[in-house]
Amino acid sequence: MLRMSLLLFDLDNTLLPRDAAYRSWAQDFLAEHSLPATDIEWMSTIDGSGYVPRETVLGATKRRYGLDHSLDLLLAHYRRGINSHIACPDSHVQALRAARSAGWTLGIVSNGGTRPQLEKIRRTGLSALVDGWVISEEANCVKPDPLIFEIAAQRCGVPPMADWVAETWMVGDHAPADIAGAEATGLRSVWLHHGRPWSEQGYRPTLKARGLPEAVGMVLTARNAPTAVGSRAARTPARPRLRPQLARAARIVQGVAQGVQGVGPETQVIPGIPGVPATPLPRPLKLPQTAQLPQTTQLPQTAQGRQAAQPA
Image 1 (tube, rainbow, N blue to C red):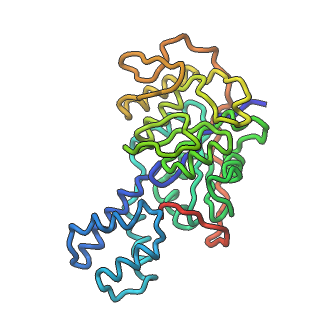
Image 2: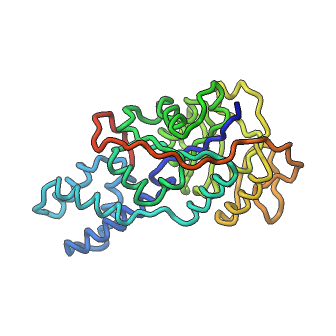
Image 3: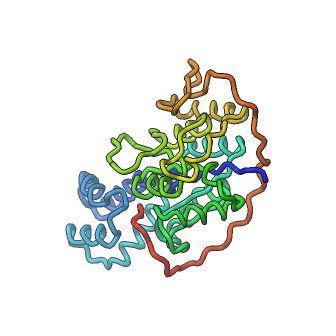
């Protein structure tokens, strides 16, 4: 049976610039209520990049400004506003298309509420760019639980075989969910640092990147990158992972990212093509052609599952 290389992504602040969309909504909110524009910093601080419950954020906002609105009304205003501002950057679309053209299967693993996350996926066009997705509320499990990554692999059509983790990467910005989840599952990972230092002590990402295009470029050009410590994949000898079509796709991504730093072990950099190995390429591995996207199973409009902390 042919193996499928799987590339999984977090949604908010990984595929989609959620914080930028929040700031745009907050600016509109302040203007609509004739409030000081400088208060955007206060609203951004209390937002906590979406990890603070919306009831807390909106309740504090209501008290601060003495607004005569119900929390339900404020929440509806927020949901409509932030989703109207959110979009998938062109550089991210190019990176996803480069990975697809290189033979990778793509999926989304998101903690959060089913309806708002699903609306983001569909509104931004991501549904046509990936092979499947899983949202914690409807799946009734949350990152970093390995189960949610297994569900994602199944929904993306990856054959259920024992070593699927050896062919899978996870890209995300939230260490306790994305990188810890990858570590627990045995996946390789790329952490989007967004200018932040790494602070976790018990685990580390395989690679680090400034943003999504750079992260995808790293994965496409990685050769024999180390697997997660203690995983089943770590006990499997590393396989050559660079194919000619990957190198071509990597050039597309690297043009968007404008350079890669710290691509990984045993990788040399060719001047002008950051992150592309200068050593001879291994014999190409035969992978299945990318199939047409399967129809996505209609998710329930409401769900009773658990909802993890996630940018909202």
